[in-house]
Length: 104
Image (cartoon, rainbow, N blue to C red; front, side):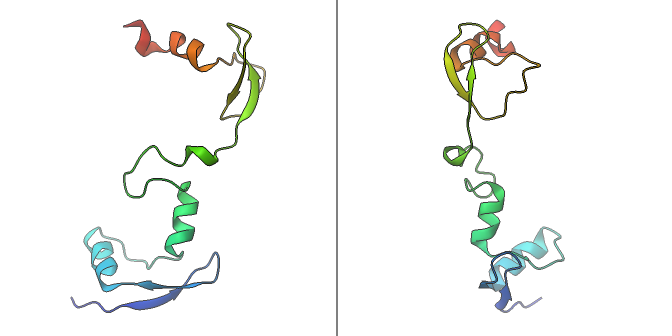
């Protein structure tokens, strides 16, 4: 099948972006039937801002952190989730001590 570049409008920010023939071929080869609804910038932001395809990692710099006190050593720390008080929260070092991987 022959593909040609298409101009689409992002449903999130309203910007126009190009759905290139190469991207269309890639989508078709993966079995995708719908055109993208978001521009590359909004897609990246929706994914968390880091990495790209299979990138893993990345994007943690912009993550909201919450203050907490380590249940083991009492040290002030920050964690990437809102502590609820029903489970212990550990600093990085104490968490590593409690991790199943460290007990091998």
